[in-house]
Image (cartoon, rainbow, N blue to C red):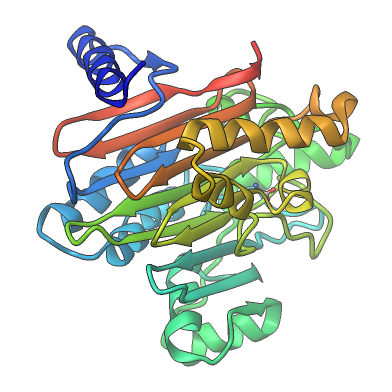
Amino acid sequence: MSTRRKFLFSSAAASIAALAGKRSFGAASYQTRKNDPVVVSTWDFGKAANAEAWKTLRNGGSALDAVEAGVKIPEADPNNHTVGYGGYPDREGHVTLDACIMDEQYRCGAVMCLEHIKHPIAVARLVMEKTPHVQLVGEGALQFALANGFQKENLLTPESEKAWKEWLKESKYEPVMNIENQNNLPGGPYNHDTIGMLAMDAKGHLSGACTTSGMAFKMRGRVGDSPIIGAGLYVDNEVGAATSTGVGEEVIRIVGSHLVVELMRQGYTPKAACKEAVERIVRRNPKKAKDIQVGFLAINKKGVYGAYALQKGFTYSVKSGREEKIYDAESKWK
Ligand code: GLY
């Protein structure tokens, strides 16, 4: 199919789905006009985050400001048990947060295992802007946040504490796939999921942010892929950007987001690049890959986006001047 026909085909599919008001399964790419701002993020809860990011993008603001503002929405939401305030704690009852941010100039900042601060993404941005470093962890990250005016807060909500105490009765660690859709079900969740957000602004610049409370009831000190530049997030303004969600250990092993961007550099579409990264996880350990979820989301410099996951159930949210939508990503296993 010619590029133009592909564009018309995907546009038509997206329009039909939009008219039907439904999620589009596998409508995994969309061509925006040059420098049309667009923001994409992981999971259904990305929709509210995108709406916040869009306020910046539609007014000509930077992709960097947009992604920071956007991911603060789930960070502040006590009903979201996988990101920020209200996130499920580690097995010792501490809510520890991981976040990173990256802009169009390869500038980046990250915090890991940060406690008591509701907006780790804002601290990650300050690490990027105010220090000669990229990563601050634990106590040092907290000291840096407090020195920069952040307030210490209790992030363990009564609901999260109750879930942790329930979990302690059996202390069984079994990740459950796509648990973000079951946050409010009794007995769950026992896993995690992350918001990864990628945006392109009116200047055509790309930035990304990624933030999570990590795996629920994880070991004390455990850090996943989300705050690791190259694993949970990567931005190359000449090529595109990518982010990930799911079991972070598997993403780290293949340096997933960097891999997706490098594949796009070689000419892969965003969806094909995400698929190849997923396939690499499968090739490494096919048996394990059957029982876990990992999803990648990517966007290229033309504003074409795409996603792919190991398991059915990974969704991603998109907002641009012409659509506001949640898509079901295609997956290796149905
Ligand atoms: N992807 C989030 C984590 O593994 O912590």
